[in-house]
Structure formats: structure tokens, C-alpha cells
Length: 343
Image 1 (cartoon, rainbow, N blue to C red):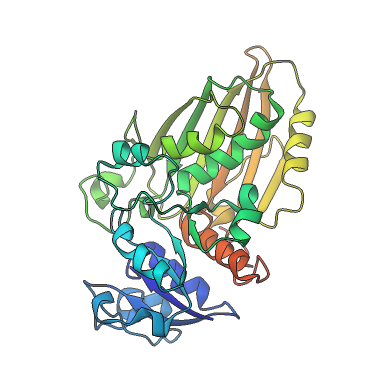
Image 2 (spheres, helix red, strand yellow; image 1 turned 90 degrees about the vertical axis):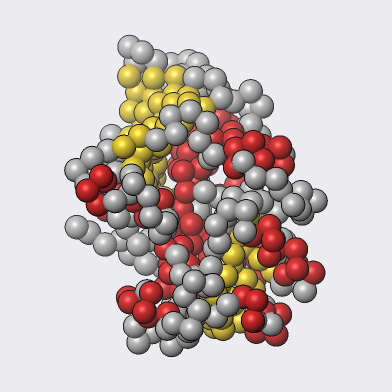
């Protein structure tokens, strides 16, 4: 299958190039970048030297329908909505890694992203395989979830489905590596500001909050999440600590069994032992999500769950390829069988 990546010079584009380079069913035929057009891919992504010989091209000069069967759009928010309609008209299957098509309610997108949506009539399947495998398998257009929402939704879904936690007293404390901010330069992501520091940001109203609540409301329509993200001085990795309050007394083994049953057979979900804490380093470079903790503070009737991924893989490009595999009928793990790098 011929694959194109639109917006391939960024971090998620680079991960798509890296992972698809090992995919036995795919041939990368084009990688676009307006800014880097004409340059070898290895000039921008030096880890791909000797692996990918392509040069970046400008999308406007490309007849993409003649070169590709499947397209990933790894573009900034509000850019994909300009590109997707024409690709769909050409019969090309698409996975969008931006936030442009994640929302069922376009008003939520416009409120949190501050942009008027130009194509609210186009709907995508929300690309979280652990919840929507059947829908993804039948889809022509999938919206890849955000990295923070992936950890929060997967970490809370079993508890909300069982109805054992208070739906309006949930705290999600998330910490992401600097690569989650993208390649764009900013004051907060400069080395001198980010190193040896943890920086909370968007304390209220982060754009991933409505995405999280949209999906969790399918388990309980009155769900409310208090979500605060932080930047931490690591390159890649994302860890979310979830604080939930139990409706009734349960022991830790029961909680662990609920998660084990919910995610039985999931190829990329790893349920750790009770009390074992997931580490960012253990999922680095992989498409796995580690769920752990499962500890109960009985005095306060509180349970703590920890959910950890690589923000560039399961949080972006790896999950996108997992979705592509489902859409194309390939083995779901194809191209994604990496083992973690530690230490």
C-alpha cells in the first residue's frame, strides 16, 4: 500500500516515517513539508539516514491521488480541515493527527481551539482502538486522539463502566515530555526554562479537556474531570495520575480484576501488578500503555491509577498506525512490535 504523510517534518511526522519504515505492508511514497521542501528527509530526521531516501515535497505541487492510497495528516490544528475534504473526495483513506475532527460537537472545537471550523459536515471515527475497534475497522476517515486524552480515557473507562467511582470528582494530573509541545519555538520549551523544572500550564480550560469528557460521557453523561497538564524535562513520555473517589468499599484486587477483564486481549495494554508504578522509560519508543497503581486510600475512599505512554507513539503516530492497520485489515500490531528501551 502506498502511504503519504502530510506534514512530515514535525515530531509526529518523524515518528510516522520511523515506524512505517518497518511496516511490511506499506511503502512511503511522499512526505510533504512546505518549509523543508527539497531537503532530504534525513536532513531533518537524521535518525532515518540510510533508511529513507525521499525528499520533502510541497503538497501544492503533488498529485497525491496518483501517488498514495492512504494519507496521514500530521499538520498543525486548523490546517487539516483545509486538506481533508479533497482527499476524501478522491477516495483516499485518512487518519488525521490534529484536533480538527475529534469533536462530535463543532461548537466545542471552536470554543477551545478558537477557530471557525470550515467543514463541520465531515465526521470522523474517534481513533481509540480499545473502545472503537469495530468502528475504526469500517472507517474511511479516523481522527487520532490526543496524547493526554489517550491516558485519561483508557485509565478511567473501566471504572466508569462499572459505576464504582463518583463521576464528578475525578482529578487527572498529567505530565508530558517536551516533544508534546511540538517543534515550534516557545519561551517555556527553551532548554533554560524547561530543564530542572516542572511547569503546569492551562490550569483550566485545556483544549484536551472537552475531548476527554466527550468520550467518558458515553459511560456517564454527567462526567466532570479536573485536568491539569504539566511539562517535565524529558524528551518523550507521558504519565497521568488519576485520583477517583469510590462509591462503595472495594479492595485493590477487585479493582485490578476490573481492569484485567476490561482490557483482556488488548495487544498494547499492559496491566501492572497492584502497587506497581508505571514508568515513562518502560514505554519509551513503543505503542504500549502501562496501567498501574490500583492503590486504595481507604480512609479517604480514594483510588489512584497511573497511566503511562510514549506521547509520540501511543499518544500520536503509533496509535495512528494501529488505526491504519485496523482500517486496512492488517494485523493490528504490524510495524508496532517494538520493545521498550531501558534505562
